[in-house]
Length: 113
Image (cartoon, rainbow, N blue to C red; front, side):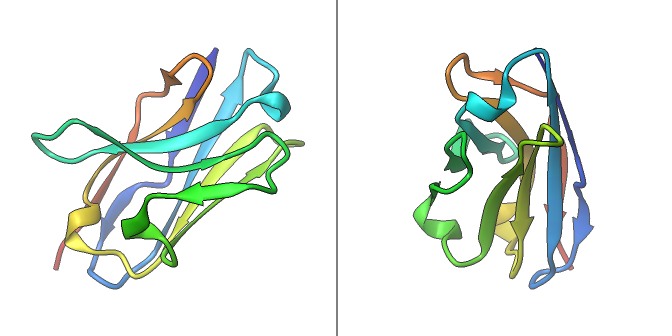
């Protein structure tokens, strides 16, 4: 199993970013996937999840209306589109295969002016 996240960076409050996660080594299309994050000095926090078909996303309350999780099963890729970013969204973002809790190395998001 391999998960590789990308797309993080430094963005001002109110800005947007799109994260990607490329998966390999398992049947991506049948796997429920999530994005989780870890703020500096904090534990992991689940952010958003999506079923294998990609038609049933679900979100942490604090990101509803701002984050959109999606997937392209033909490309074995998971996405997280983030708008109206806030300082409290700062952290390392990981994609996770829910059945095994396998994660990638993460991509850092810093929201700061």
